[in-house]
Image 1: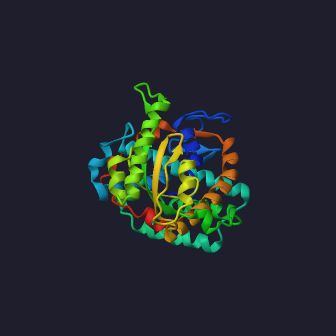
Image 2: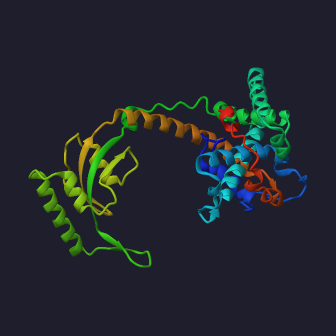
Image 3: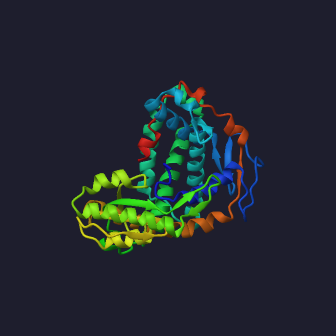
Length: 343
């Protein structure tokens, strides 16, 4: 999401469903009632105009075409054309931006005069770069561009203001990232109906015996990487992770090891492991993980406010207008710097 880089997808998904026409429990959803011919949608009566949508759609379309060519739009992705996929993403971006401006109103969060002046300057730069044909096609005026930039910056400000006091203390030990190699021998199969079938005790015994032989080979000087590559049932040999990311027994053993150490056989509900610790503390990765954990805490705090707020919102969506927008009609529209200026 370009608009909501700092927000979890779950929050946006509520509106992706809402605007796609799905009734979510507890919400009143209306379609194409009270919309003008140029309203793409309304959320709690706040409209998103076609001209606003065009600012996003034209830049999105041209950014992709500049990289991949115009043939990309007919490619299939998750059962839809790539054009439909991009339009859905833009729809969610717009819905999120409009929702955040409504939240700003409730929380009495506004842009400063300095911030407003910045959006005016950016809007002027963008608008002056448009050709007459682009202005006519998008039916856009400079004050519309200015208003959209203001909504974008206000959406970012809402997030920052509501999470300003969220600064969790996270230690290096909590955020630590380690790297290991592993040999895995599973003790179950998945049958043709997708059911998990556990090995018998006898079968598990044979698997464990095979793992004991591999461990003996390693302890006698065998190369761990080679042995792991030739014998693991997993799709990978190397694992880099933090706490809470792996199966408990595997993780407990791994975090208790030092670099170069090889474990014994580790019993888990899914099978047996032998692991070798390559690094018991990856400094750069740990610092990145710490920042991500802080960001996750901010996201959670924000969603604790955002999710209840959207629960009772209503929406109206103009499917006919939205479906009439085709990227093939934009061949003379070359502008692509809308996002660049926002950032």
